[in-house]
Length: 136
Image 1 (tube, rainbow, N blue to C red):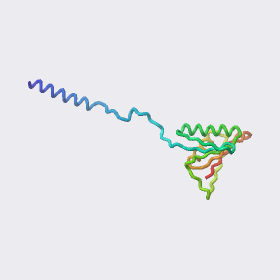
Image 2 (cartoon, rainbow, N blue to C red):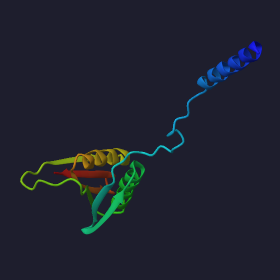
Image 3 (cartoon, one colour):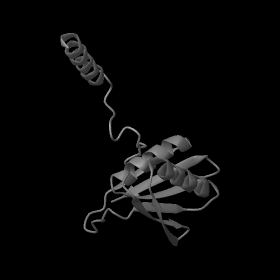
Image 4 (tube, rainbow, N blue to C red):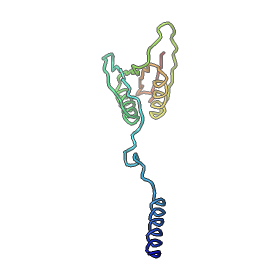
């Protein structure tokens, strides 16, 4: 009887030890990770005609900016702004940036839009320059 009790007690202790050594499963580990991004409501114009769109991810936002560059390269004047920012009509701050690099123009427009500026984009095919103007 004593051997049986000792055997059962030993098996119970070993099973508890084995259970305690197993890796704990996180309840959230199998959920996909999503990019955190605030939905942006973008208002834009092409040659004075107004449009609106929403962008939900950083990738969509970059695609939008590159699309605006492509439209500008076709000779159109484009402007865009994030409608979540309100403009202060009492003060006008204007910045102008000129570059031949489309990537630099995209980065500058991205930065200025995220800071709440209205951005106007023009392309000069003769010089190959993008002229980006930000107004707040």
